[in-house]
Image (cartoon, rainbow, N blue to C red):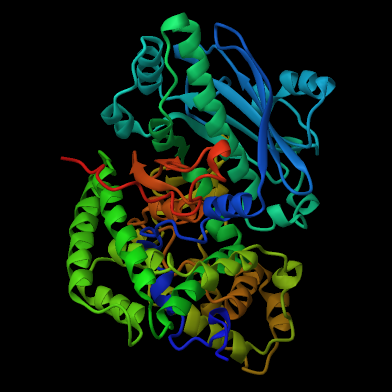
Length: 568
């Protein structure tokens, strides 16, 4: 009997961190089977979650609250949504906004009347309010004003909304923050991490957004019914499915990849292991090849309907569309059944395609092999509390070797050149979130955050000169305690090779957008639309089943839009 496919050894090694961990590549990642939204929808479908809406108390002006419950095999989670009648002049996506069209919390269990009263007094205030450990997340959202009015007015008049109008935006509301893990007093992750449905990263936040999408659809329908009275029609389910939840994400998210090195390593390592596993498959069945070709065609459609007005993204999109068509032509002409077909295809792509298309292909080849790669989702969290303890007994010769091997890119930079340290990360007093400033144009150096591991590793390497190889890290740090954080990072990277971005994070040529896209791709976001190099709009759960559809539709290939929706 042959070994199960998931137990077969890797014939093809994982890609070198020196190749993967460059910002230009990280900033070209696409959603894949291990993206957090897909992990959630697979679990909900597999475990037969059920959903209910025990309350929808919204008045004719669109003010009130609703409750959406997700019933797992063992417990219930409830999204408590508050709808507000927000004047246009108060609508803002900035973090420091004080009012929103809707505000939300994901409640652990089913709230009673006293809970609703307490939440009504706090959730609409967001940062100015307080919540308890019964709340797992806190979030808010604003309408996409033009599309919201288009959809509501058309439904109220007895007509379906225009598909082209929807395609131009992709969502009726966009979240401006989804807070979890103890924010504002909500439950710490440690309180729920042992629950199977919460074990993978960001599952609470993804469930909140999934239920928010259902609320937004229902609220738009309710407002159309109120306006149109007897003339209103129900939103067509196929049209509704094309709409996700938008999100505006800025610099506040970017440092996460630097401040959570073990967690970041686990995400990348799971993805790289999945890619290597598929590339190690010696033969592909006809069904596997057919599925791949089908999803490639749908990826071309996705690229065609992906719109952006930002020059960088316009250029990337043009190259991606061209490369995906080249990939399609190549795939039609080659045999993808034997002789390690996915490895052959990937090696061809490395020579023939740009980085964006290479990473799209890296996601696509995983699609036929859920039985091979999906279990890797269980390895993507970080539960190693001891990982941050410095090993003081390490000889300095070993530390030098780690720095020379894993930080060679940083040691090659001339850190005396102004362009090499032109930027500085700091925390804004106004927004209380990380920001990136121009070091030589603003007086921000005294407030700089330790988010330049390359520069700091090079400084550490320089101060090791003159120390004997057999001296210990503990002795060195007694003299140079300023290098503790760099020693800790180097020891982490020695054990977790994908933990460090191998690029300068304070250089004049830094594109923070690459850091944002990398993290958002792991969420499962699609159709990135940068508004600058520092903030981006995305779509979450676009084309996904709604709660009532999970058991009736394929809940796993939804990120790929149906064929025939491309631009003319």
